[in-house]
Length: 101
Ligand SMILES: [Zn+2]
Image (cartoon, rainbow, N blue to C red):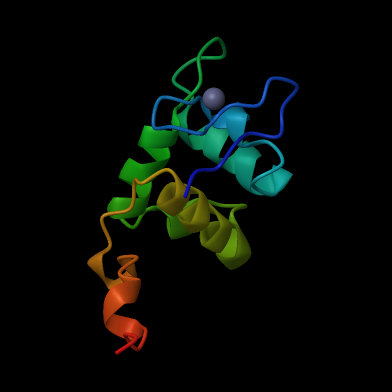
């Protein structure tokens, strides 16, 4: 599963995408909070990979303004971009679904 941006130039969201590529995918509040957290200077942006790093370090919940709903949406974006390392949510449908005989 891939996730495309909702910008004027749609493209698949990848680890290299800057945070603003997620506009429309995440709440504006969460986007702004991520930008504040990740932006090293006003002329550059953090990337989706940076968000994945915060997520795996479980630091997303420490960032003011994201909120639980924002974290859920961030996780969905990361999962769609193939960036979550959470084996609990491994998309392995074959074990859950009953196999046709
Ligand atoms: Zn992008």
